[in-house]
Image (cartoon, rainbow, N blue to C red; front, side):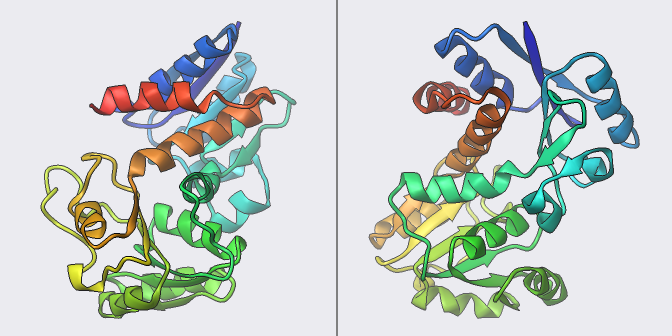
Length: 268
């Protein structure tokens, strides 16, 4: 039996175990997905221990996505983003990937949203914002990063080819954009009455991807839907980063429908 798992602290809230267990069941794979919660200064030791124990692969979440960089051989995407959320331990040397980037791109593709040649606005310059900005730029979009702290937005934009940056006053650029990604926690429970983007900036020609998945339907998504925009909730990003990890570990096409059903059952 293969064992995969999640490295984080805390991990009790994670929705990854039921999602991955559903995939194993759907494809009749003899595997289990478990959680590991090491001390916050023990990320590298945890990766080494997992390899020693024969763990086949790990997902990595807060607060370890940056900490594990020195414990793995990151691929080009993970190195540029500066964070690892998936580790393959099957080949001796731990190899690190950032499937959050694929989570953004595959969420948009699944909803028939093209990226190449489009203008995109990313709200937020944290971990999710970095993944979104690189995903969009790598797929051919012109990216603008809007963040409350302008210096942080500018720092991210300097790393992303062709990106620009500004404060929240630059959210007016959404009016001329085709893609909007909320990569902040604004709108998350218990503050689900908040929105990161003024309603007046939204329009029918926009695709809105909100990283928040609790609640599934945020105020931003409700207001976007009301003006005819395409809306994509945060559970799709969570799903597709997991799908990408599953496919890297197993070399098999993920049972997306089964994983999505399990995930949304947990969020219901």
